[in-house]
Image 1 (cartoon, rainbow, N blue to C red):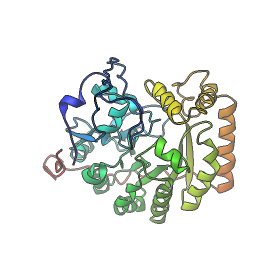
Image 2 (image 1 turned 90 degrees about the horizontal axis):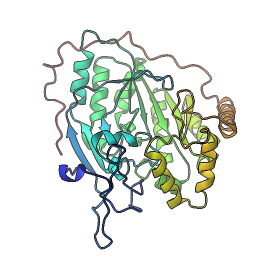
Image 3 (image 1 turned 90 degrees about the vertical axis):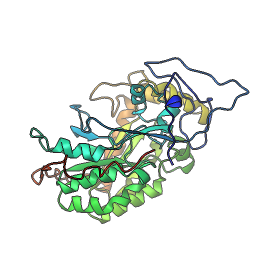
Length: 371
């Protein structure tokens, strides 16, 4: 059951009392950069309960394009806006400002889903000028967050990819990906699919605070094993690396991922763009007050003295002694474990079969869910 009320989804600033909310990552709900005003709850009043509200939208377009030199793909699809996993570090949180919502608790409780995503994808693939190249699902928010269990938007997209033999990659920390193993295995058998699964830490207590509604590390490693066993190429993504908080797990996570069947690995140093910086610092001071200044000191040393460095070529790895040490540790561990030893073949584009008439085919098939 998904709740949605337009009166409570729009408006200024925070509609939550600040502090800890069970099952949520953010400790606050600040106004976004376009509407910085923030409302306050009187001490004697109880704020709204932390339910997830999910709003249906009809997408006018579905394939986003980028030319960033820092990411290995030029096309992506995000079935959802906002993410219920609640990861406090999520670099996508500031995008909620475009919806006039907060990057804080709003981001993880006030979601939208693109009900017509699969139908729109067929329309875009059928355009005469479309040139087939890989599409990544989940570059911004997780395609296997909890609401996907009922909405099945990601699965519908994969069905389109398989039907038209289009190459696709997925990025997730959701163990629910194994539900779609039938589709992924068939895509992979044709050289059309790869998956990256993020494993962030091995400490269950840290996981519950850092990414409260994401799958456990054990569940993610089991997903890697299931995918690899079905012939799906899997990359282990250790992201983000948070200095003095989870970086000590790097070698162990890489070893567990390799044992589970991951072929390659990558890592990303913590990024704190826009509103995420203040929110992450508040989270640190709330959960790890004795470690907060040390964490931020190491991060700033790797970001040219700032909380964040958005420059291409620097934002993923950082610079300075800590960043160099981290990169050295990663390379040594990958070499020892045999991760990335051979370059993976590029996903095939020569099998692509464009839809003939997407407007007529499957009409109304994807608009099955309402709030």
